[in-house]
Length: 385
Image 1 (cartoon, rainbow, N blue to C red):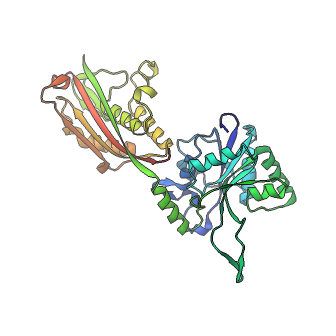
Image 2: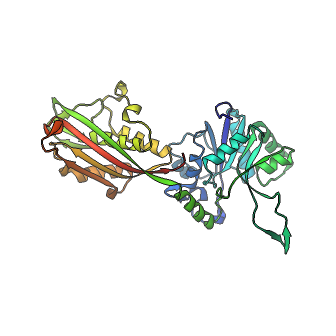
């Protein structure tokens, strides 16, 4: 089934407090590899048009920090139970009028894109489906062995016809029926739910041991990428008092030509970040033919590239920048540039290197006709393709 042919909404249940985790904050806001559990989970569903999160009251600040840069529907506050929270989320989706809804626990960040595709593909055959893992271990109760055939560990996402599961929850509330999950609610009201067999990687984080296991799995799925950016700006004949490099105004008597503020350093870094995640270049996102970008502060370009990186679940870890020019003398302001970039990008100063070199009087830089800059950045991103 092509997702463009039908309307599929995603409902992420993130309203719990995670008392069994014994943490200082709700478990969905604990961090794995410098990102919250909730953020890891949401990244797996970012291609869907409608993503509804149900959060706990009083969690707003934690939530907003975790989802910065993601396109999500307005939040809904959950109830006293998971079932009540799901019902509130389902009702909030009525304005979107989805054909199907995927309901997923925020505390299952190890779900991968293939799992989600398997669910979507099975919607062609069955209206309601859920990920589940067959039980393979021996089971005993009070000294008696339990036959494990046809026993499953039910996971999420669980996908349903939207109108069906909404009405099922409405009936459950009226009847005071409490289900173990949404599949049990659907089945209680006579609807079949098919299992999509899945592995055990899709764990639900409940205890510290679960968190440690998820940490190992997620860290194994993070890869390091390197991007390179190169930019050149020529001097013009206009006299000036200073030029801007890496956001720092440096005294100099010649102006750099450019549609924006011609900050060759920030332009090179921007291109390097975009290159690391294969998202074009600065001209793709800020075409020089567009007059609204004329004389624009290049921090805007840099911030946009960082936002795109974050939207891909990535983070910036290192910058190595080299200026090539005869004048002005960069070394005198190097530490100031490093400090400024570190503060602006929330990086440690030991993760930023700024160097300068001449070209031994060779080429356009050697003739003092302009400044060139090369940036190499290192980023961490999820390795899912």
